[in-house]
Image (cartoon, rainbow, N blue to C red; front, side):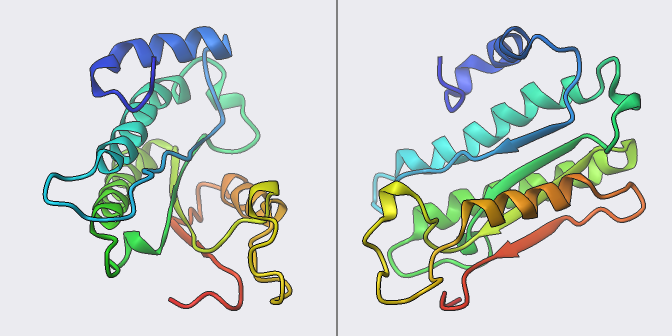
Length: 181
């Protein structure tokens, strides 16, 4: 089963209930991302994967955020979608990627408007730049602090999650000092 397959609809919800074995959840982060970087006449599977994954994930998680015990959580239930600058503007050769990121951002805004009044914090985090991981060793070696620290991403997401209902941030933008945007 893959969460990006639109045909799995209800089974994603059932699977998450079984995997997490909880009636309610406090924080969930959607990291779905398409792999396609070029726009083609025939489209790009990455476009659908990114949006479908985020959509299916939200459909599976939101009912759990209303589950028993959600009123006793220290912080309001939080759903964070991860995006990129492409959610704000398209780039040369990045049409398919931008379409999927625009779609996820629009869905996050709609969900925030629908579920925010019900006490669920829905946020969209733009993470724009190379993330400092084992896979990115060797990238930008001559530019110190040019990659985004995973710890700093976690801190930013925790900041979003620990906000009270009186001050939900919908969109947060993370990038290193040298990233052009």
